[in-house]
Length: 224
Image 1 (cartoon, rainbow, N blue to C red):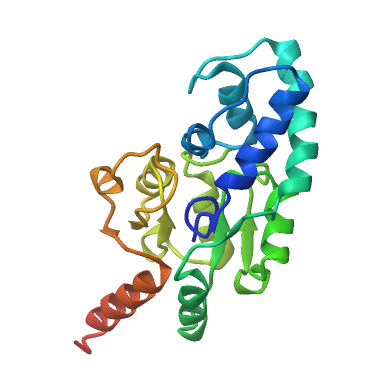
Image 2: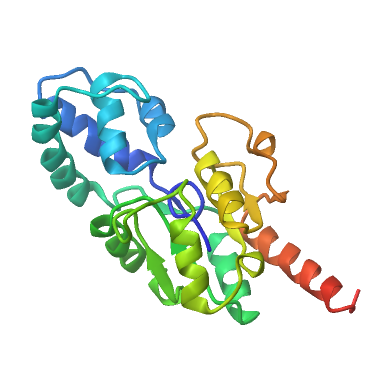
């Protein structure tokens, strides 16, 4: 299982552009792109709330939020792939995992409205046997439901499934589900060191993750 924003794709620039177009339409002060980057990780609605309030957990005026959400969605539809690209090592890592015969899933808090077009337009759709977006199930990460649902889909136990992500949402979900978890250090964890989340490994990119998976599975098989 692989997270999307901050793990597979660097989406921060296009999210910031959409957010600032929304704020401009509402007559509000814009956010620095680096600030928006720090707001990513809990789905579109929470991102919009943070941009409206300048706070991680504050709730904006309900009427303002109701106006803001469709404006943001419209702008993000337009900016979806202006600058968004896979991170270095992603395509090589996905190809290596596919060649190993490893079934792959995307587990993201991003809405399906944006997830599926992103994967298709950037040539990633064919790698994944399952895509779970933030609105695919009643709960999303850090709740373990998406991970346990994926386990049932593939017919395996949680201990047999690995999550690769970039944030506390991912480590919390994995621990709650009973899955091992790797973290990449380049994503959206609010500027905090992912090593402090105590994942099973910190990998520089998806290609290194594929190599570590190969090493660990050959050890388990008694080859090494």
